[in-house]
Image (cartoon, rainbow, N blue to C red):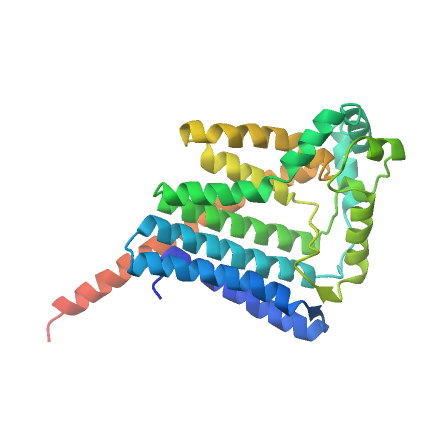
Length: 315
């Protein structure tokens, strides 16, 4: 198999995560839905194989890089999700009360905001649908960048997402939080008025996992664990940033991610400062991904230069 330098870099991250996952599974004695995860891994490997077919047999690099990027996206999502869960139970004190005080200092009170928003049921249903578009948006952008031949931009996009996810997981491990919905209780009339993606039952499950950990992992029941920095904000910033120069194609993404701001607060149950944290994490991930990509691009040139020097060296 032949992979581009950026693809090899991403594969090295995925393999490292999978190794860590295996060690943690054995150390913690956590059972895993082997068949469920095997199907997802097979899907990722199929996409990698499809990419290799189009790279070597059909000689269509656009389809090749797109299929490989999609396969890497699937495999990283699996490895990253398992790793996130295996960090449970959390070892450090939750910081949600502190984040709530930061919100209040900024003049934002989450229960009051959600209570006000619950008066507008149709808007609430719209935001519920918008909140669910985060991952589909990333997949759509991956396909657009790949099929349009923006290979460097595609790899920058993919590495930014990977680095952003890892930054969020690492920060959350040391300073865990589950969002405003974990410390505030909404009145029943509010939760009944508007469907919430992160409602009271969801919250109770997440807090329970944080305290007691997980004994069985299955892809059929994966919950979003991270409060600060908001990973939904990282994904929204990625979508807007990488599509903003794509002309008319950018319009639906910009509209969706403008609506994503209130959706993250209401549907995701996040503190306002979670979103600021997500923006900072995105900015750092974007810069680190660009630096990593530049290094990936320099490596073949250095190797070619070394080979050239060997060829011209005197006997």
